[in-house]
Length: 101
Image 1 (tube, one colour):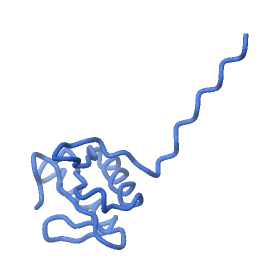
Image 2 (image 1 turned 90 degrees about the vertical axis):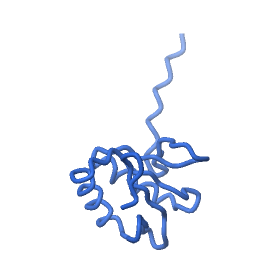
Image 3 (image 1 turned 120 degrees about the vertical axis):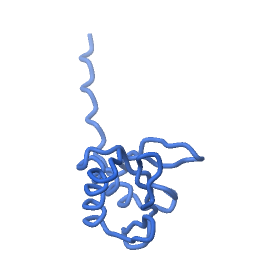
Image 4 (image 1 turned 135 degrees about the horizontal axis):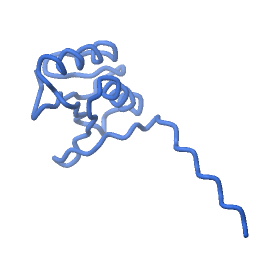
């Protein structure tokens, strides 16, 4: 398995699938695989490598799969891990403007 420091390493592939180690999987397979690895290997997160090649949908799938499995979602940028932001998440509601005095 492509596991480093408690994180599953995945790369984006075509048609909204992901590769990890020698496996290529879609959303449902990735979700189940994360659950299995959380139990068997005690992983704590998932790292999206080659994030510049990932579609917004792929980034979204990683974030929601990680949240559902109570894992951290990371992106590898310049050799460092950064939290992976969900590009499809709704923007937080703006606070109402204070009434003019």
